[in-house]
Length: 290
Length: 295
Image (cartoon, rainbow over all chains, first blue to last red):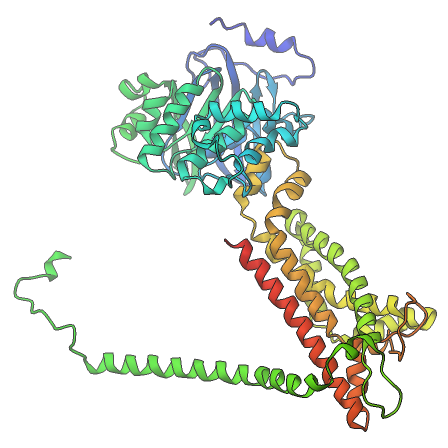
């Protein structure tokens, strides 16, 4: 993969805001990344004026699985929710800095958050299918956006991609809530995939599931890798090691009694797990804290 | 903590009851008895009403009662069809106004409400729930009846003022019960707020909204004071929407009960029975709907 000069690539797009682009290695945290799907630059998030995460910068590669790990309160979920502007739905949340999605700042004033969320799928911590049929769950997104042509095929394809088709093909009219927890989460993945996003954000997608279902979700993620860029938040380090290509380690910085999330290190997963550059990362990964 | 489990510690029989435990048990029994007594006291009047209304109303109840108007003077027989029709018109009209307005207002409060305006609206909704109905009647009387006269329209309007706060408050509760993760799931798929409301929030809350509306309808059907000053009452079937006084079951019961002869009083009992059965049916179906949705 070749990386075109990001600056000139950006200049070619009209209507984009000026931004600072860091050379590799000069950004506070960096990793060699080819084609990026997200460029997060100096992002601060506040909830009701209180700083929750500080100065996050990272490039998230296309077609790979990126894991965000770290102890509770380190801001990994907060950052994830910035990537599709879900934080806009929380009262008092504010985001500073820029997040470029294929070079376009999703926080630019003329960007419609609903459009961002349509392109960037999300899977939540707790499986949250709608109390409607399996079919209608998957068709929900396409119907919202008027994609009614070939809906049956679209639903089937999404369910196949989510490795759920064989289990539900004979009961598409049953309620989505009648499925087991792991199946519900795969249904939620199918629901997101049905809109053909190029990124899927997963917020601890297996933390409410049993180990078998967790493995099924991880297998699924490996299958989806390549078709989609996946960003996963997890506090299960083994999970990050098993599925991800890159890992970003966050921590909580205590300053004047205020807890602020910070990005410590971001690199290839095997590097993070075998040869971490920062002792805090190593301490966390080897279980000395967190 | 394992230190306390020293080998020399004796095992106490589970059946040993020390005085302290005995007192706790007695107190528990006493409180339980008190609560039971309170429940019985609360239910006695309800049962007495139920029995009395059925006992006195049943003889005059029948096909004639439901299809005939009240005869004049001390004549026995006849019925309250004019009241049934009047109540149907006015409650129907009030429902048409207050259900959509009430649910929309509740959606605003739950989904869009921010800042002081929401607090003010909620406060006044609470106040309105407690406003005596005779005030509502007086208000409609002063505002409209003196200009356009008595009738089903002003009566229904008065009833809708009574129903509105009940519907707003119950709908608000129901909309709040819709889990936040359902809204997040919808937003995560790129739904706009109104799409989330129409496709996720309202369908999920629908049984609860229906229940609230039905209870408000039951309340309006039994309303009297508002109608005294707006519908006024009538002795015939009225099909005019406005400008002519119209009967309601409650008004007929009120007047019938004051008639100095047994025939009129008996019709009033039958009217009360009819109304009670209607309200009971509405309440039961409301409960049925909400219990079905919980499965």
